Image (cartoon, one colour):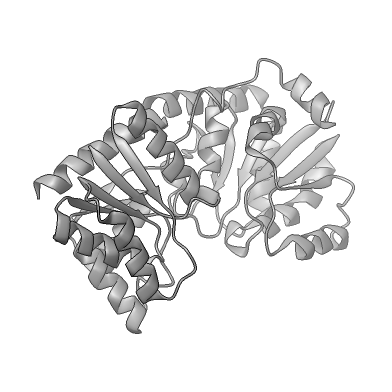
Amino acid sequence: MRIAMIGDRGGGGVATHINELSKQLETQGHTVTKISPRRLVPPLAVARYLRKLVAGYDIIHVHGDYDVPGLMAGLAAAKAFGGGTVFTTHGTGTRYWRAGKRWGALWRDSARRFDAIVSVSEYVRRRLVQVIGENPPKHYTVYNGVDPSFFSPLKNSAEAKRALGFHGRYVVLYQGRLAPSKGIAYLLQAVPFLRDRIRNLAVVIGGQGELDMELKRDTRRLGVADVVEFKGFVPQDILPLYYGASDVVVVPSVIEAMGIVPLEAMSMKKAVIGAKTGGIPELVVTGRTGLLVPPRDPEAIADAVIELHDRPEVAAELGENGRNMILERFSWEQIARETLKVYSLARSG
C-alpha cells in the first residue's frame, strides 16, 4: 500500500506518532511518504501539498488539528487520483473545533469529508463527534503508542540514579512541555508537603517551554529550590535513563488528549500518578497501573506520592501491570495493525 503521511515531524507527540507509525508500516511492507507542512499562506500551502501528492496514493493520512491546507489538499488529491482519506486528531481542538469564524467552519467542513477520522483517545473521539457529527465520517480510536524495546525496564535503577546524580534519593519525575495545560505548577505546589514526609527527596523536571522562568521563580518562592531540579530538554536517547532513575512519574495535566509520557513510564515499569482529565484515565487506572488524582489539586498529588513512597510493593505492582498493558495494547506494532484496519475501511467506503 502507498501511503502519504502529512503532518509536522519537527518534534513533540505528533511527530513521534508519525515517525513511529511510519516506521512500523514500512516494516510491514508498505511504502510511506512523509510530507511536512511549511509556514506558507494557505493557498500556497495547498498548492505545495498537491504537488507532493500528484503521484497518487492508496491512502492520504493527515495528522494534527490545525493544518487546514493539509486537509483541503488531501481531499482534493484523493478526489483527483483516487485513494482513501484518513485524518488523525491528536488534541482537544479548542482552536478550530468550535470556532465560528471562517477557518473553524472550513476545518469542520473539511474534516466531515474524510473517509475516516482517528482520535488518539476515546475522550477526544467523543468530543469530536459532538462537533462534526457521527456519520459521515466514520470515527475510530487508535491510541498513541510506545516502543517497549527502547523504553525497557532497567535492571538496576540505583545505577541510573548514580549516573544522573540522584544516588540515594527518592525521585519524583515530571517529563514534558512546561506549558499551562500540563499542570506543572500544581506539582511544584505539592513539593512543600512532600519534603516534610520524604527524606532525600528529588523532584526532577524534564522539558522546556513558555513557563520555564515562571516555574523557576515559583520554586524559589515556595522555598523548595533545594529539592527541585530543572533539567531542560532531555534528549530522546537518554530519556529511558531518567525514567529508570525515577521512583514515580507524575502527569499533572489540566488538559490532555491522551499523552505519551504515561505510556513511556508504564513501559519502563514505573507507577504513574495522573490527573483525572482528558484521556489520561484510559491509561492510568487507579489500583492497576497507577493512581488518579483530581486536576489542580497539589495536596492530592502529594498524598498519592507519599502513598507510593510508603508502600513500595504497591508501586512495583502498578509498574508491572503497566508494562503488561503496554505489551498487550500499546506497542507501535499493535498501533500500526489497528491503523491498517482503518485504512482498509476508508478505502472500502
